[in-house]
Length: 222
Image (cartoon, rainbow, N blue to C red; front, side):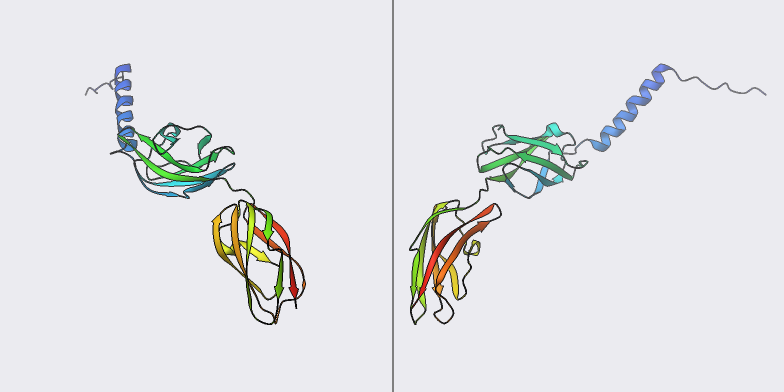
């Protein structure tokens, strides 16, 4: 009884097998359509540091060359550095985006460049700087026997536009924002309770995550 001799694989057969394997892998990782971004978090990036931004969607590229930063007119801009923070997938990508310290605060786009199309997500660059109070007026408040409401005007730079970012180390004094004209000119309304306030020098502070600034204001209880 004769046995069939096993056939030897030729170089041509090996090449064909590799081609078929490559096609199978490509079928798995190839996008089925253009990239789609469903969310971009966070969308506000401070200048001068790296922020990890998570993109979720469909058909997201798995190569870093598929991501770039542009202005709102789709023109490439400098001052940004990108890297993959984790291994990307077609539905989730974590980008480490470093914004240069000199990048102007503005709205920019993360452009996603796929084989079958493009997508974009808007981001805002902020340039957080510590508030500076250069002057305040009046710097003396007189309190008598009734509740006193006194507007105090602050001048400076990077002044917060919310009352929660102002503080005075005096009891019986409430603060609210009377008018936020601009980051260089803010009017804070002092509500002074005559039963609780005491004569003395106090510090009015403006603060945010970048730092704080304070100036002395005198309360004179009559």
